[in-house]
Image (tube, rainbow, N blue to C red; front, side, top):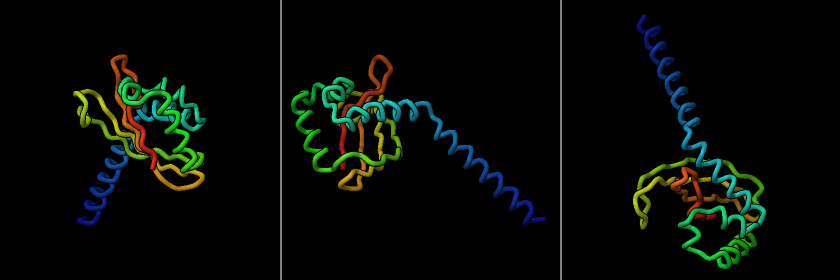
Length: 141
């Protein structure tokens, strides 16, 4: 009797854990931020610095000129090579980001395999006034 009760409780706990993980995986904020990150990364993967700069957030654009971004992107891609695989990792959301006013921010991580190295990419995102998530920082490693 005791073991049957224990087994039912363990099974219930396991079911709750599974439901919670599915709910977290389907969080609309995570889905929207990761989709925006992937759309932006598609420009980066093509080496289209102009389009990626144009699609980035206002904070990104005010921090770096399109010419400096173009040069930096070329150097990074020469060092790491093309992306051969990218897997979404965790997403963290915050109302604060060091050095910026309060807002809606996200940190999106990807485990990325480049032609010349295994690494990761970290993207800082901001939900701007129009409600869209945009990249404000890109850190490939």
